Amino acid sequence: MNGGAALRFVAASARYPGADRDAIAEIDLDVAPGEFVVLLGPSGCGKSTLLRTVNRLVALARGRIELDGADVAATDPVTLRRGIGYAIQAVGLFAHMSVARNVAVVPSLLGWEPARIAARVDELLALVRLDPARYRDRFPRALSGGEAQRVGVARALAAEPRVLLMDEPFGAVDAIVRTELQRELIDIVARLGTTTLFVTHDVEEALRLADRLVVMRDGRIEGQGTVEELLEAPASPYVRALLRADDPIDRAYFEHARSALRGSR
Ligand SMILES: Nc1ncnc2c1ncn2[C@@H]1O[C@H](COP(=O)(O)OP(=O)(O)OP(=O)(O)O)[C@@H](O)[C@H]1O
Ligand SMILES: [Mg+2]
Image (cartoon, rainbow, N blue to C red; front, side):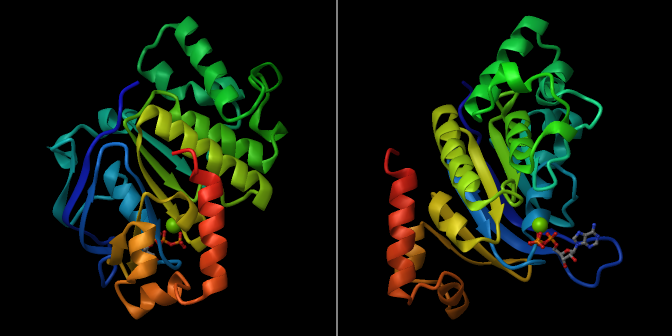
């Protein structure tokens, strides 16, 4: 496997056309190879925008983003995106393509041999606990929401990207399937060493998944650190309140859920 890339934001700011303020402002963030970083914050704080600046769906107004030291603004966007897995809440599967072809989109673009693609598709479907024999020839309309999100995750992982961007990828599934998908994702990225930026506005999900947590507010980073650091010493009253760091019952529950999920790492 490839192992993860290093990702660095340097004073990165972005503004949508016609907007009177930056959607993200002065973002400084260093993500180590293989690190799992969760972006947490309320609706509209800039989480999705931050992800989209990495694969250049949104251009920076100022600052820069480096992937393994190379400025992404200097990399051809198509080449860049083929090397970055991207999963979004809406899933965005191609309705006219089978599950197998959906998962195979990037490997096909990269010109992999058909036999290698077929093997990879089956391997990925098995990874996300979808029996390849039952699911590979189905069309998206014949999938449940949770199954479709698994296919979306499989597609994001298909070409063994060194960076994975996940924008609320489990938003539409129930709590049990969500926990299962979280566990699968943690196992997969740990095995592959994939550098992951994962967006959520679900505090519990953030606390369970994060190697490092980045709390955003109004386009800026309000605080960042390991879960333990942020719970012990929240960077601000806002972070403290968001993480409910003062509530001993919530704390005990989060710690239990986290160790149950990540105990093997
Ligand atoms: N395509 C766009 N054009 C103009 N403004 C946009 C666009 N997309 C987002 N914005 C604005 O940029 C800001 C950040 O939006 P963003 O989608 O990054 O938030 P978010 O943290 O992902 O929110 P949510 O949790 O609701 O998904 C918001 O004020 C939003 O209204
Ligand atoms: Mg969003």
